[in-house]
Image 1: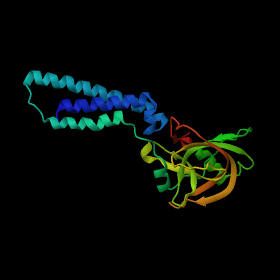
Image 2: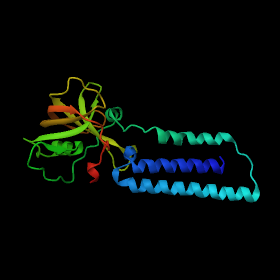
Image 3: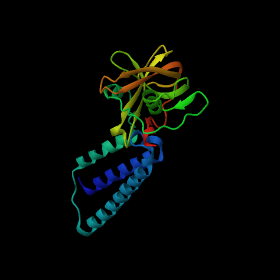
Image 4: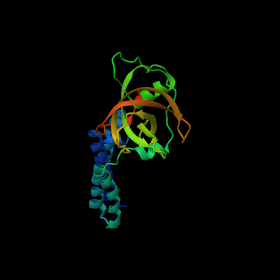
Length: 232
């Protein structure tokens, strides 16, 4: 691979990082707080690419150069794909094949006094599985649908510590007034009440609490599809 091709790859990759960091695209890869690092990495790569081109031109002028194999430019294609094709967030396929990441909470904030209480999937699951704070309360939770091999519906968010590579699902079993058609990966805003039922995830034997649904409506995929509740 010649230096011009190296510079082109670095420039395009840096541009892709800058594009992702200045839009919500970066949320498909890393958590919210890493935006400054994504932007910084993009700047470094772009500057390094420009410096490489400058030094290479000086070398060619001073010493002459030889043509390099054109096939090296094919390495630019994966970077172009990264720019032009945004990968989807992890969804139901990963959720039903990965055990729930729910763990006993270290501490939970007091609930507001008015209903319905808007909670994240992680927050609801933690309270429903390990406390009695949701008894008699109406809650509203947003997540995507996943169906296991037996057709059991779950409301899921993929929780992450750092980036999409370490994302793990947190699942809430759904019962009650469910939509007539359950489509995996569809995003729903679910309103319901605490259900005193807990099952075990067949993948890792983790705890899965339940929510009794009173109403549900489809919603658009959020800008940040991952749940970072346990990082806050």
